[in-house]
Image 1 (spheres, rainbow, N blue to C red):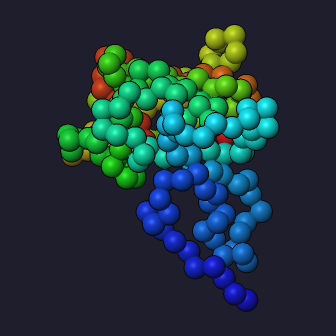
Image 2: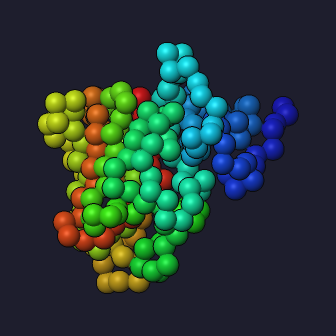
Length: 197
């Protein structure tokens, strides 16, 4: 049986790609395919939204963002927009990245970051490091809270916290239209955000 040699994510660049591309043919589980979504720039080619198919699972790749870039509609092709988010390379070792060098920080308003989806999703996840208790809340199209995940305490690196940095928070529910991360007067970063249709 022949196989395709696996490559690391680092050698594949920052283009949208299927995770199944990197697996040998005989080793592909019969599971949902996912996409790693790259940054879209204003000069990127446009696509016909009426024929756009959203993959079942999308992981946002922040490595194409520049330091201190305000993040809003760079991932609109994948059906998500951000509010109050800035791309940073953490200089404070208390806020390590989960992967790569770039994370999203809640700014200019401290402790609050929001994602809005073009069409409802079934789940959203992200790796959070925060200086305070943090709530990840999901809302439906009416603005009603439908589910919530919590980081019970600060989880800064090299601290006495019982919670490790980069704690994965996940919300699951049909009809998620908007998600917020809120650190209650604290500072927070989020990395490797994923969501599924």
